[in-house]
Length: 310
Length: 310
Image 1 (cartoon, chains in turn yellow, red):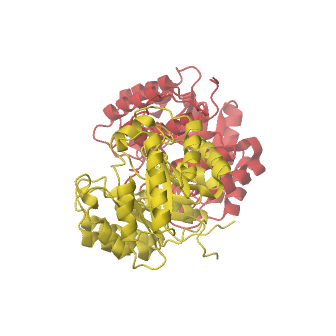
Image 2 (cartoon, chains in turn green, brown):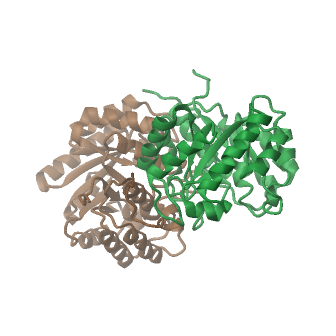
Image 3 (cartoon, chains in turn blue, orange):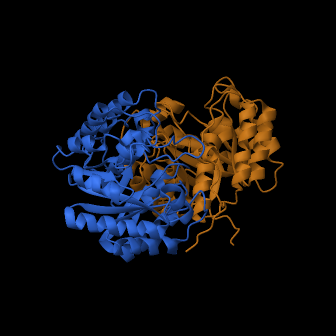
């Protein structure tokens, strides 16, 4: 039985999830939650974002959370930074990897970070110069927001996505992934765009960050897997915008995604029972917050782990 | 723009959905609901099942519902029959197509219809003889239950599925589809099994009937589409076992399935706005019953219908 993981599940709950809810999870609970995620076998976690606490008080403890996460050997500790100032703080904290959001939709870019796409590319170049001089071992990833459509702009041209991805690599990004920020992606589009992305960027083509807004989260992950994507963002309990509410963001649920891959015989390196157990510290740290997931609710099937029986 | 539908969505809500809820939808509401489904563009509807009213009072009005549905030109009116006696009543009502459930799992077969698989094949031969003599134009379909796993037996061998499918065709079935009765299917298994089914049965390989118990309903439909399946069962509002409750059956939600295909540019012949409107008569006829669907809750994306913009 092969034990080497074939896909990397990148858990974004402690950043993407926690910054989307109103309540602030106490630091001690964040650390317990991260420990439980690591115990389940997660190898990459986006643990926080480095933004002014006045904007996102939920993320004010990011340096402490990073310091704790760094004690787990083998874990890639990741943080989101919106700009050069955030990158300085993140690099000082000791993270292994930083990720920057760049919107393909100009309207979304202005609304989200109050910068044009060109200004975000300038920011990217500044961050790249910073890490190159200060801590060259730190990886820099870009997630292209609204790559599959925008609630402000509507359809997003696929040529725009690819052009911007190439520009991000030229600006210094090690990897460029595609995000379905608005839950508008479909499997055919996912296959086309990731195929083009890999053709243009080769090994610098990054993660699929899918949302389940219209129920297509797993189908879109499957479509991305089919064309060679091997890194997938997901959020435990689907935290990050209520997935069943109108206009929801709805991250793909880590538990369901891991169930899909493991059931297919695609190794994730994650123990699904322990992953489901990691919902407890999440719930304890955010009392009253809805936590989603079909697999945890239905339970694991009889005979799990099942293996193909041809 | 192509307008010929490329896939057939077979709506099972009026049968599979309504027989799974405790309340009985009044006949007048059933007719309004079916009219709304037809107005949205559905071309095949399983309108009821012919079983003793003592067992399923929800289906006692099946002949009246069939009679009404037959007035819609172009609609394939379908009913479930568990045995020869049910088939007699169904054929007398004038349906275009009957479907019989045959379990691959012997344990499930005994629990569900109190017959072994061999006894169900005998039943199938008797029903085939009946329709051949009485109304030869009526199609006979088999849905193989527990084809992807069984809550009683656990894993189901793929060879058993294929052997039983061949036996059903030999017993007279025009089409044999595969049902994920227990929500245990995964996309790799779906691709393997439908590929083998088509290799063995050719054009007699039938529909994919997927459940969303563990969130994989649409991913499994995509996997089936990828290997050539073109008929998909689905239930409006996911009616048919609460999809979000432990042990749920959870039919694939018609609205989400149609959204996926239409977004991919695969024509269903269905108007998604009218399909969402068809939830109203369903809700009116079953007050208080939960109705699911991510696409109806999130709404259609800006600029819908979108078309690929390479």
